[in-house]
Picture 1 (cartoon, rainbow, N blue to C red):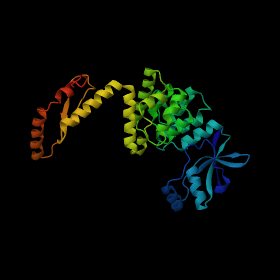
Picture 2: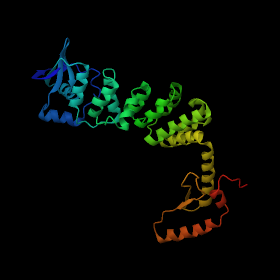
Picture 3: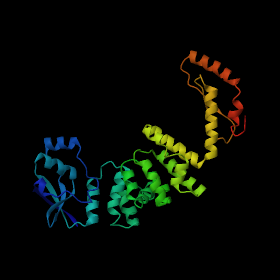
Length: 320
């Protein structure tokens, strides 16, 4: 394969613009159409000759715009490219393009059948802006081994890159059980990792499949569907945590209930800052003016005489 110096002019409709090596092809941005309409085509597309005519290697957006404008295409010929060459040339032509994890995975999916894992790591990942020795590199390669439905969740932004670690440890049945949770929601890194990890660990701890852990944690409650996406995800994460840490969750529930009783009618907030490793509590309030400060002091004095303090300092004890 070599990139020739020969540039030809061809009708846009004569260039075939399909192929799996065009893994980032999409609708062109509006500014590109304006630029080509005003100034013309500044950079040739890259093509190669096939038995059925010219085929595009790189420059999909330019070709799409030129076709829509009814303009001829300047094309530079590439001689005898193989499948790996097609992908590498496409990457080189898009070297300045901002990438996200979904785009990186799409590129790796193209090269995975063509190269072994060491070559993917050493040659392709750096072209995608990823250090082959980094955690992101390991995660991206792990995604290649996950089922297509999960790769689609990553591509759509519903599952984060970091979810690969725990997903790879799950059985197919366990992954199938949690997959519907990602159909309608776009999960943040921390929420997704916590959700999946707690369900996986609860499954191992109880000897039950993840599907049963989810049922036991009431994660199939129809009421969740009526919540906003943010509230629904918060509820699901909380229920997964309950399944993994039932004793801790019960402590938190008792503490939060007592804290609400203590602070009712005030702006004070009471929190347990260290997961009940100590019996201390943390009080906080936001003050904007002297009047609010005076009220906060009065409220604190009144709170000091309330009988619920022992239930906050030692929520594990039976205070009945």
